[in-house]
Amino acid sequence: MRCLLLGAGMQARAIAHDLLRQPDLDHLDVVEFDGPTLDAFLADIADVRLRGHRGDVRDDAFTAPLFKGADVCVSAVNYWYNAALTRTAIRHACHFLDLGGNNDVVAEQFAQHEAAQAAGVTILPDCGLAPGLAGLLGWHLAQGWDRCDNVRLRVGGLPQNPQPPLHYMIVFAVQGLINEYIEPCRVIRDGALDIVPGMSELETLEFAGFGELEAFQTSGGCSTLPDTLLGHVRDMDYKTIRYPGHCAQIQLMMDIGLTGSETVATPAGAVRPRDLLGACLEQACPKTGPDLVLLRAEAEGEIGGERRCRRIEIVDREDPETGLTAMTRMTGFPAAILAAMLARGEVSETGARPQELVVPVPRLIEELAARGVEIRETDSAL
Image (cartoon, rainbow, N blue to C red; front, side, top):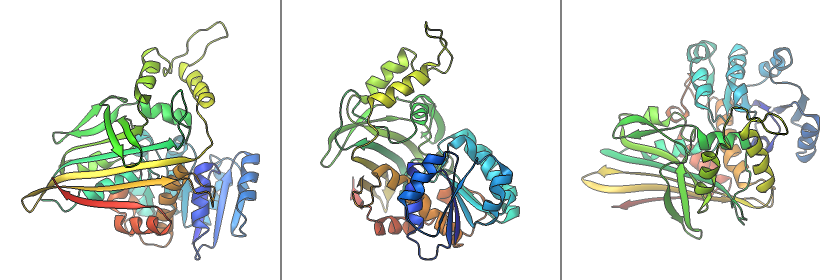
């Protein structure tokens, strides 16, 4: 199989690590605009099948031969490039998936469904952790009931050794983090689609060995799942997990306007509050150190006249052997697994598709387990 990877950041490193483990990989082309970032990426992964290309993913003349020479393209660049990259992939008959994270961009991609079908390619947006794996597990758990009442997704990327003031570490782009906190969140309530504010509906929960944690509404984490589960479940939502107190701290910043996008006059000049907040978060929160990912997907309902709860839990930690963080593993590995499926022709449906409708989730779970991801499934009476 021939793969194209756009971006050479943290998530891309995990994607490349996984694809290069596949014996049927012919080559992996990696595109990155920043020269030092690309050089460091290539120096870190020694494999003759890895080929680096410095350039701009928006440059059609530059990317055209790379798309033409690939079976599948994985986008690990910022989400706002993905609509145009989807059109490029279709034009050159290349399967395409991305790490996503923005509902408006995903809607633009789905608008290319007929063009993708005509080209015989599959487009899968939102294929990371959340959106991505979490939604796939939620869809999987919602199947096979006489009546499914609730689907709940809870996901968090956290430091193993939390430090004040926020007890958090920067595990992906800080402006994307702010978007998740402030944008509206899509849910299913009483069988209908609804919108709730970010940071709302605070709850407490526990994971074995971690004590009490908190979770609250954030946007984008469930991607298309509210649409595909509409009419099948009564309630569904997605929340982000943090250490206790984080929600109140971020809410205070929102209340005083620090997440605003309109410029504000200051003695030093005009500034967007969210840009200042982002810079402060970058300084206040570590970017390095051992991290972990907590994921809980559960569904409740009735089957055979009995009320039951089905649950999948994942606790993943940084891998000292490879140096891959938990967040890059849990974001990059699902994307790499799906890319290999597309390149090998294991997903037969073409067009721009919600991944939960075309991805064989039990197979994905098996592949993750083979990579050392501990997945715990339970099924209990209520």
